[in-house]
Length: 398
Ligand SMILES: Cc1cc2nc3c(=O)[nH]c(=O)nc-3n(C[C@H](O)[C@H](O)[C@H](O)COP(=O)(O)OP(=O)(O)OC[C@H]3O[C@@H](n4cnc5c(N)ncnc54)[C@H](O)[C@@H]3O)c2cc1C
Image (cartoon, rainbow, N blue to C red; front, side, top):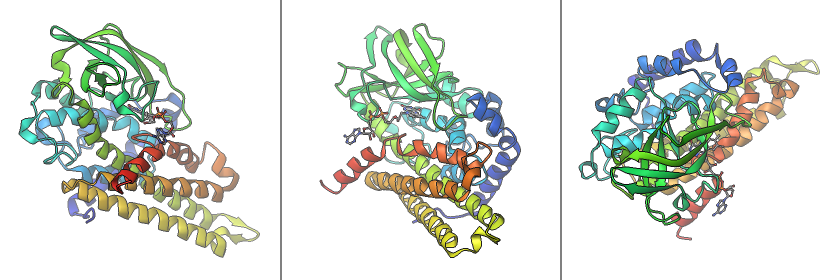
């Protein structure tokens, strides 16, 4: 199984490449300095149908499945964009799918036959209020799971939501939330029983709700164009109608949607590796030392060959696992392996690509420098490399 390169997908690649060339590359350095991408970029991406890829037309998306989303992610980075840009512009890829699924829809092709389809309580109201405007590029959403006390142990979430009539009263805090500074709403994981019970629910919380404070913008090693925030909730009253699905189904929903996030991060990893191979190859052809181009030396040629092999092998494996997920196969272990394989390939390739650039590779002017910094998060976000290994070990029966 793999991702078949249909004429439609070739068109999608061309559309994505044109978007990056025209709308992103002239401004990316400014956005990196500003610490965020402008809201207008969301509207521009929506207008050409890019923002809604992987979401059904019935909820305002552009159609397509998980594999089409992977094609877009890959092409953005291969065209000179970055994983940070994807984090900022496509945060809805993690903020919306639970809502779409609860309304009985599918996104990214991931939910086929998984969430019980029609059995789930549909919530068209949430789709109208949050999903459609976000896919139209007029709203920005975020997903808040991680808390200051820990992110890996999702069941240990301590942010509580106590029922009070038609509302929940939410108390707690979240951290490292992507697009948290700009977000108009936050899909928030809360504990709807005693803290640490693992009984979780997902609530959509609007910016501006009394008691909900967006804290400082967090400064980071990489992903500079993606804003990251701490969030605080003190007696925040959230209407029960803002709950996604049934009470206490949040943990399952979070786990099911992790697969798409992990495959996206795996895609960002191998695509970053591929881009860095291209950058390093170009550099080694042009750069001469001791009277000869670097690329004429066997040591350099072999290093580039090994980098290329690693990146392509990672891509092939991620594509295979993604195709199996899209076909509805329960491949949780394989998704974890795909993320770790791609992240390991990326870490090694970006490091060697920067080394081949010499001193220039260390400068802010060098694209490879940005990829080197951006890549470091890929083995942390969406479940760390160690947590992926735990899943793999369980899959081995250990
Ligand atoms: C830039 C950025 C963006 C992010 N965006 C979001 C977002 O949008 N929404 C969101 O909810 N979160 C987000 N996160 C949080 C991210 O998902 C967490 O950082 C990640 O899940 C790890 O959680 P933690 O930082 O609390 O580390 P911890 O859970 O405290 O883990 C610390 C270390 O211990 C290891 N470890 C933990 N448990 C075990 C174990 N049982 N066995 C072996 N090793 C273990 C981990 O692998 C890690 O190396 C983001 C983080 C960053 C940095």
